[in-house]
Amino acid sequence: MLAWIRNVIGVLLIVQAASASAVLNIEIIGAGEHQIPVAVVPFGGDAKASQAINEVVVADLARTGLFRLIDVTDKTPHDVREVNFVDWQKHNVEALAVGTVTLEGKRVEVKFQLLDAVKQAVLDSQGVSSSEGKLRAVGHRVADLIYEKMTGNKGVFSTRIAYVNRQGKKFSLVVADSDGQNEQALLTQNAPIMSPAWSSDGSKIAYVSFAGAHAVVYIQSVYSNQRTVIADSRGSNSAPAWSPDGKQLAVVIGREGSSQIYLVTPEGKDMRRITTGGGIDTEPNFSPDGQSLLFTSDRGGTPQIYQMPVAGGTAKRITFGAGNNYSPRYSPDGKSFVFTHQAKGKFYIAKQDIQSGQMELITGGGWEKKPSFSPNGKVVMYASELGGRGILATVSSDGRVKQKMSTTNGDAREPIWGPRL
Amino acid sequence: MKKIIVGLALMSLLAACTTPKPKVDEPAAQIPDASASVNDTGAVTPTATDSTTLDLTEADTPVKFDPNDPLSDPNSILAKRSVYYAVDIYAVADADEPLVQAHAKYLSQHPERRLRLEGNSDEQGSNEYNLALGQRRADAVKKMLLLGGAKDNQVEAFSYGEEKPKAEERGESAWSQNRRTDFNYRK
Image (cartoon, one colour):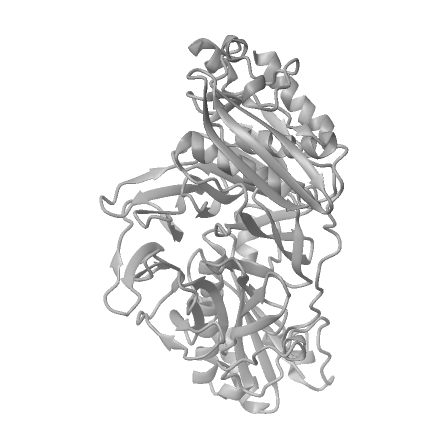
């Protein structure tokens, strides 16, 4: 058994979810060693809707690297009463999902059960419903519920991501589902867009635009496209970060020889400076409790990560050793942070424990930048490259399971994981 | 069992072809230009602005100067309008000081002339750090120009960071061209 699992490691599972022009293609490499064999039996009821949902659920679970999806087409139970557990045990299936899809008017409703094939017991029984056009969303929700029951952690399949796509001189701020589907450009312009940042309620994105004479920070609604300038001072305005309560942002203003961190309201009011260095302080990021900031500073001679109270006060350096460090972001539990580590001409994604100061590289190195955690802390998304093009990549926070997501057109860069809604 | 997994992958690959295309080529909003459209939407106008009233918008085409203006003389030291930097350095190199001094003198003698300084960086480091570094480079040139006699209202310092590279390739030969401050004179 173990030998077989070793064989699987290194097999590329390519899940090409759609053939549209700018869709992300996903590649999974290096699945974990202790994959749980599960089966998601295509649900009964409306066949077309069932297939669409099943596709999403299977792809979501497979992408985590935690599950081995067993496909047994000659069996189609849709309820626990129709399941012959002995048959499933023969296929080494540990858990299976069965259920039905009902289309009624403009609504789609899924009822499903998650079954333990070994104990022959119902682990979970759930219903998910939505409007008819949202079959993918239903699939993500079903996958979230299965993932949570199987791992004890909340799923993030229903969350969204944002990134910047560049095609020549054209830049787009894109939001998409966590699997790269359902893309929507919030803004397209012939000028650079930088540093998208989600508000904690997922309704707004702050970003930097160069459409005017210089770098300006905007907040834009994800739903209405209405936007607000929040920092447009002389010089460069950049690096927006939301406080967890959404009541203020940290931004960076560069002028007269230094870049400093300021706090400002989402209306662009009450701007006040909180760093006092004479060099570069940038890339602020709030701790989940809203009390501390991590940021990048060159005050010690090289770019390193520092931590300071949001209320102001002394900043302390928290990365040491050879190489430069940039772009820190806290984990959702506030106990660690991820960042970009530069050493000997390569860029790595690194993770550090706040308490112990222990640092580890979670990627192999290359051109890897701007990491951010998934809302459950289990996955880190970052910008990488493939064949000279910018792509999005993820790695499980233990460094074991990696995915690449490339757009068909242009360079994808600066991914940022949105909150769980 | 390995076959089963591969089969599954192929299945989703085939199934993929029937999935409707998301409308990615139709962005929900094309916001043409910065400040104007923000006001149009009724959104909050910037309150944090302390910009001067100078119009120093980006030049798409090079500005043409009067033939008698020293800026029109290709043999003048003023014809050179970029300074370059070593990695992570923002101070003007000693060798470039005469160039910056010449521009300072020109600005002091032509008080109506406006100059846009555009700081740039290579793509090493993070783009936010590089934006800050480019700003520092432009700021350092501006400081030297002011010390040399230019007035604050003549010169504006900006940064593009690594966002607008002159040379797109990866490596030092491209990067050395991108670590740069451009002197972009305006009418």
